[in-house]
Image (cartoon, rainbow, N blue to C red; front, side, top):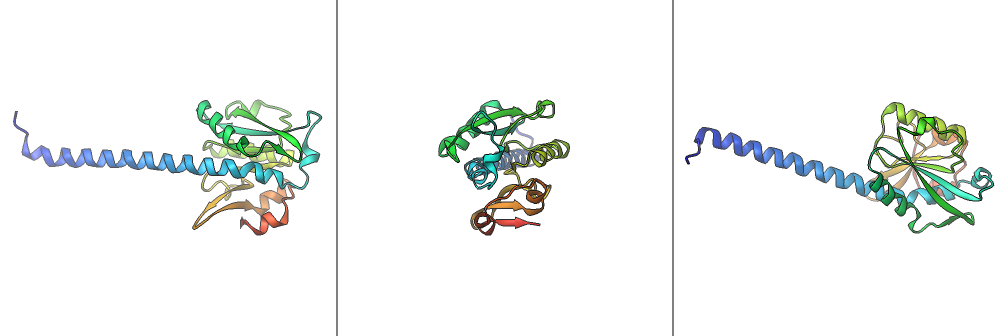
Length: 191
């Protein structure tokens, strides 16, 4: 079987291009997963420095953290494990993570949660609803995804030479959340 020389180079170039794009996509997914995992360890610590946290806990005496996910329940469960791996209690209260699929979130009423962690990218409209709930409930809303803090999420991470908590000061004031000043000073802020 002879290979047509005229087609060989373009086909080879196409295959290299496709494999490069596929590798880049896998690398981007791996980097995003790593970003989410790092943020999941920071999230409960951020909730713990909410000076009014104990006022937001109902009679169940638990700190309920809501984890919003899109489709991958298994991945959401792994993130929930990361959230509670080292932080079992906040303010002497047991920490529980509640998984909420994004399409169910708008129908939920009275979540009685102490914080929200967005574990999957969401649309602008979905993010708007999450931020609205966080502001009305006066709780921390945290997203590890690049650009979400600038879109109005209260907290996230800033990746530079080091990884920093990233706080949207305007959103924090809108939600009437009072984070300890030491955390604010040790964070990158967005006004």
